[in-house]
Length: 58
Image 1 (cartoon, rainbow, N blue to C red):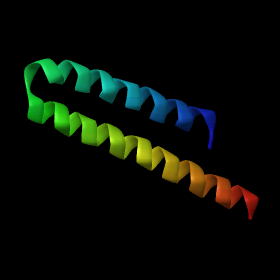
Image 2 (image 1 turned 90 degrees about the vertical axis):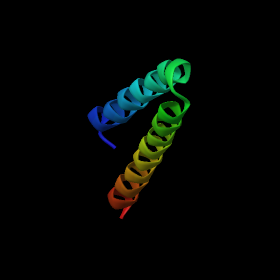
Image 3 (image 1 turned 60 degrees about the vertical axis):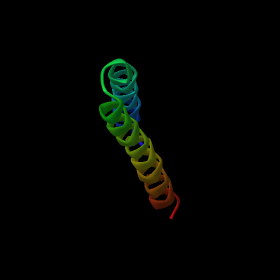
């Protein structure tokens, strides 16, 4: 995976984690939503990385 794409996923995940931490103090449902979005973003990052690695090997 290109470094710029890796950086995007890493930075966006950290932003979502910070939003989750802030939302915990304000609204539990909003915190749960940000948590799910964080997990989805991390999962998509792993999927994209695996597909690009598999594509480069073959």
